Length: 383
Image (cartoon, one colour):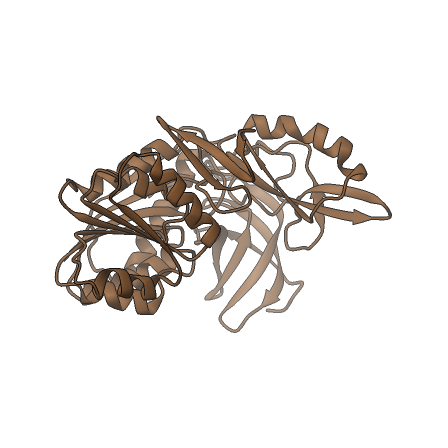
């Protein structure tokens, strides 16, 4: 087939990343903004060595899992990919994708039961947003990146942002041409700041985090997310706990009852926040170190002869650094709570750990990103 050719087909499934899957004459075709059960007419837009990319030209017969997207920018803005899918089915799709990746990439013949935890809110759940600013002919456009483009789409209201953030947009847009602003502006649901740091209140704790840095964005689901992680750690009163890739110390602060808490984070500004946040726990058993995870783990844990009983890892999308993964694999005994935002690299890393003697005991899918294709998971391993 060549670009421009059209096909009529029924969508079989939705692949990781949000593309519907069609098989035409033995060739896999990926089509965005479709869902299993759709009968569509599609046009080929790219020919790859092992697959084709297409765009939907006409929806001939909609899937029973399809719904009207709640946002008028859906399909134009590049942020959401699942708004056309009913929320319960979004969860089913993500569960299948996570299982498939663990089995295909991680080579797990069998898996423990996978607990799926939905977001309490499928809309208006994000407590922060990064807006892009584009200026042309003296006029500023504030919004999000257009799908498959570097163009900025002006956004009046976003369906997944907390309503308080949407309420801030008109005033910001009214003054944006009169002030010098960076090409990216971060807005939070809360207006509370300390110096240049954002304050987030969670349960009975107050967290400081860099205003433009990473922080788990699903406010309504965050308390349950923390509960899953801390309960997997088990009884830690007389144990040493390592919080690797700890960010602003979110998990470390809920584990302050441990005998010792060691936090490791590459970003020095986030690490400084972790120290401040942990100091509020009125506990003197924590130490936080900025730098490469494997280097700090060696210098502050292994070389000192410490045997951490629990290690929490929450790496970026690229997964754990190989050198750090090898250090974890070499531990004679430990529990690992692996928080992941990328099931592909999670599956790769779990295969290394299981090959070194760890056992995958529990797995959770927490839907931190309704309407989007991202998958957040927590897995628990023992050696």
